[in-house]
Length: 297
Image (cartoon, rainbow, N blue to C red):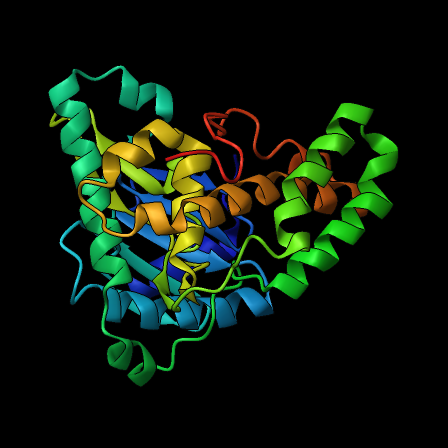
C-alpha cells in the first residue's frame, strides 16, 4: 500500500534525524490514518477537520488518564493539530479466540488486568476530568437517542430483515420502551470503543501489553465499556472480571442492551450510506455469548 507523500514529508519534518527504513500504513480507522515507522513509532494523521477536533480531545484525555492507569496507553511524543506520534505499544488484538486458547491461569491474569484497567479508568476523579474540560463521549446515547434509533431501525432496516430478526429488535427494545430498563448511571471517563483490536496482548508474556485508540473516549456511562467487552468476549468473561471490577451486576442489563444496539447502529449506517465496508465491520468480532436483558446474574 502506497504511503501518501505528504505523510512522509511530515514525518521527516518532525523527525529529521530518524531513518525511515520501514514504513507501514494502516487506513482501517474511521478517523485517522496511521503510519508505523521502523516498528517503533506510531504517527497518526486525522482524515478530516472533525477528526482534528477529536484528536485534540484525545490528547487531553490521554494526559489525564496516564496519571491514574497502570496498563500502558499511548505516551504522546509530538502533538500538532494534524499529527501526533508516540512509541509503538507492541501486541496483537485480544480476540475471544486468543483469550480462550490460554491456560486457565493465564486467562485469569489477563481478565484481572482488564478488570483493573476498567476500575482505574472509571474511577478517575471527576474533578480531574472536569479540570481538563473533557466532553461527553460520542458513544454516549440517552434514552431519547435510543428510542429514535429504534424508530429508524423499523423504518430503514426492517425492509431488509427477516421476521425473526424484526422480533428480536422489538424484544430487545421492549424494556427501554416500557421503562423497566434505566440507562441513567453516574457519568465517568470511558474509553468508548474497547473492541478487541484496541486491547493489545503479548503472546510471549501471556499478558496485556496496552490499550490504544482513545479517539472515542470522553464522559459517559461505564456500561458502554462493559458492553464492548460483552460484545467482543462474552458474558462469561464479564462475570469473571466482576472479581476485579466493582458494579458489574448493577450495570449488566444496560451493558446487554448497549451491546445489542451496536450491531444495529453499524447496520443502519451501512444501509444509509450504501457502504458495504461499514455493513461488514463487525464480522468476526462478536462473541454472541450475551444473555437477554433481565436474565439472572
